[in-house]
Image (cartoon, rainbow, N blue to C red; front, side):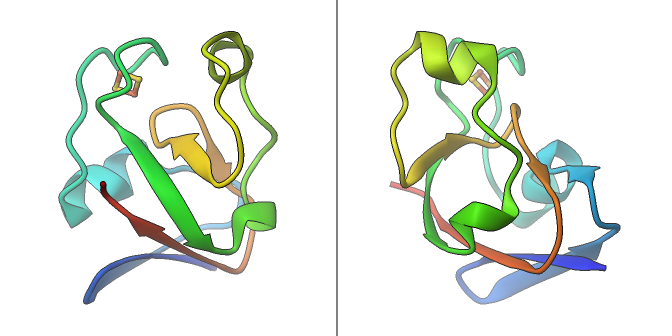
Length: 85
Ligand code: FES
């Protein structure tokens, strides 16, 4: 199992899972869900390497570490801690 943490809330989800639903339940807001609007952009405080590689859309908009779009990545394993800003 993998774990996603946002402030004082956390969710356990299977390894190699999409983060969208879990993050929505934790309070991350979503818009297009296709990697363009950046509504779901967060800072990854811990566990950046536990996420899947940047998607084509994340690369297209020039996203760089430690920022990720929660509609575009999977958690591969372990713990990922994020912050909304
Ligand atoms: S919801 Fe639009 S980029 Fe993720």
